[in-house]
View 1 (cartoon, helix red, strand yellow):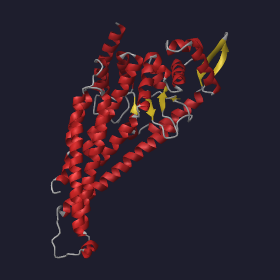
View 2 (cartoon, rainbow over the protein chains, first blue to last red; view 1 turned 30 degrees about the vertical axis):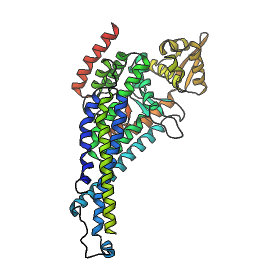
View 3 (cartoon, rainbow over the protein chains, first blue to last red; view 1 turned 30 degrees about the horizontal axis):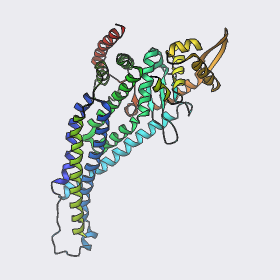
View 4 (tube, one colour; view 1 turned 180 degrees about the vertical axis):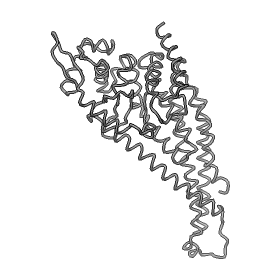
Length: 295
Length: 126
């Protein structure tokens, strides 16, 4: 308990370090899934660690001490009081961040779903800003594409097919689930923010590859990404997916031959997930034993 | 490609046709639309889609020669634009949760991208 309980808080770091190299090459799909799953697991484990640490505060609560049947016996005190207090504060912070992240996603998609007629698969907005956005559906409604006249007029007929194929790939593959999972993970544990950004980049790469396969032309796809991104340069204050150079990396990857799947690079994150599960099991067993000692 | 097309969700073809009409910015005949959409759609398919879109009042049309020319109804798209602007303009936090096609870049990225674009266009042209 003494050491193990702190481990999940640190085990997010190797995943964070692995995220960028994993995003940089290979097939984007398996990497996106693996990173999302392990990030969510790492976030759940570090949160559980904080919960366990914070719960040790309870042994100082007066009513519990009064209930103590054996006041003479020295109770185990595995976690120093201040550490438990810090854990409680961190938990509170995590709760606020998750609430904000979830609310931001819900309100953004709700407002975009309200744009245009409800049943259209694609809504065209007469706006010069070149934008194409995939708006995920709900249980009752299909997802849809939201495109501006700005992007339609900017691109030629072939490039427009790329854009539509790219956005449809986001919807058909449910990429918003992966980005939602990693957004929650990063809100729970800010050490995972680079993993969230890597997954955001990977789903764009994934949709690029799908679009390239559908139109049957990687260079055309690269050209469409480059031209659309160049036209969108002027927007100030936009948050980047993975630091500077998302568009450059996407275009470069498309100008390279199609990525081949080397599953070996997935071994490390999966192994990390197994270690996390083992550590959490140990913590939980020890915590249950401790709780029984109190009661 | 054809098998892929066969599995496409309804509305995909309509979307392609609408994209062509909006990009053109002028009334187009069914033949013109078919040429722009690309070889994958038959003339009759394009014609059927245009008629369906007209029935849904998404496009308007008038007689021209033996057929019709079509153009998109602007009111809906103007309304859509103001809704979209209200939802997204000056909201970088909201942009960050979206899957957007155009990625943003800084100036050095833009220069690099122009070079890559040159490479892409040359190789495609060759």
